[in-house]
Image (cartoon, rainbow over all chains, first blue to last red; front, side, top):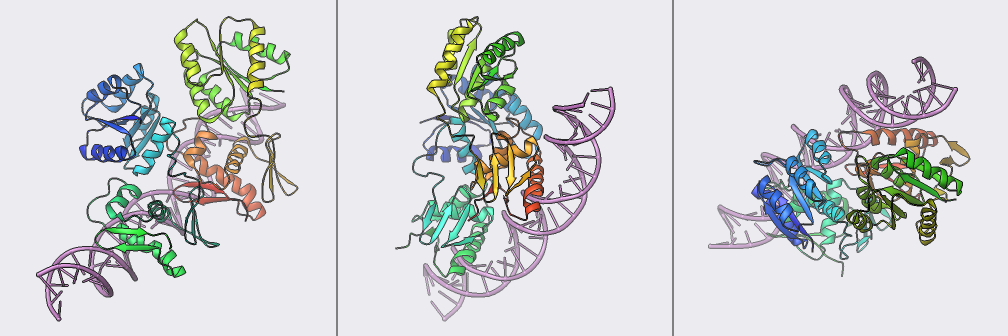
Length: 227
Length: 227
DNA sequence: CAGAATGATGAGCATTCATTGAAAAATGGG
DNA sequence: CCCATTTTTCAATGAATGCTCATCATTCTG
């Protein structure tokens, strides 16, 4: 499986990324500053580099430039939101892609797959419909139908539903949902997941009189296959 | 007859090839640098690409790699020196054949014939009409009709529409549109996609009172088949 | 059964985002 | 080189969405 180098000084973020990437089956290396990152990028045989622009010592752009002098390894830059000049400089020096922080982990995973030229794992073909009882979700068009009725969802509502359905028959914790459906920055006191579960219930459970999303008290939520 | 793209910065050589190829009955396009070459290779419907390795800006190997990300069009690489590493890199990134300069034109013609036969229209038929409800798009002539009414579009408008229609029933992100319809690696803050969607809507949706292009808030745009 | 923990809910505020008009910039034909 | 057309930028607007917070309801625990 591919080996990915994370160059990121904020340990919290680095750890979080490490966990998620390992969970996807990647081998992960971490460097906490630019010099270390440059060294590992060139010495280890990494298949992809995730490179924060704001780094102590050697900054990300410089690191990118120097990596490019010797290697064509794909580089995905992380940049603080609103810093367009950084973005431009990053791509100019040869980065393959960039993401503005904070971002949802799913998007980074998608971009990694693109950069590595990997197809999505067989387990979850993106384009086929997800069906739960009378409910049909079409990821390509992001549409949801109950029988022949279209259910109009907002972005977050849709993403929450898709995630729950992709993990059907498994209890999903609020933390897990925050990590995958919301931005990684999210932590601390929030009941935003509860609120969105409620929105979905209003639009689906209540409207059609079914029990789609169950609460598992003290643990999280679950969508079960109809039996 | 087949359409061939020549990506070559030395004008003398490009002209020479153009003359010879036209004499053989091929349609010829010329790009003088990597970026332009990449663009034309992806946007025009070319049947074969002749690609110089030494190019200003984006080099040939990179161009080749990026073409391969989206297209299976046959590629013949040209390299000035007898440089083995270039040769290997070229074939690695998916070139179909390779020639060292200088070469006899007859040999190139022979290789072109081989390449064209080998890959004869395996790709999707690009010339058939695309039909969405009452809307009919003819890629060959780049014309668009609503019932019997011709809709006159500018180049960008047409390309945006064709791309959306070719990806019907799939949400297409602004980024995706920027990459495919606009210049590759278009970045920075721009709402040019939104503006062009508006132009199309004025000329189609508004004029004929239909809902062709839907907005998927926070994600992109989509054209759905009428159901 | 009372109090504590956990989840559900309603309302309201803040932010983001798409749309739009207008104008600047680029392109291309004559 | 000029003019018309096309492409792109920019800023204002308002609506949709995302989120917080306070309160209410339910479940759990002792």
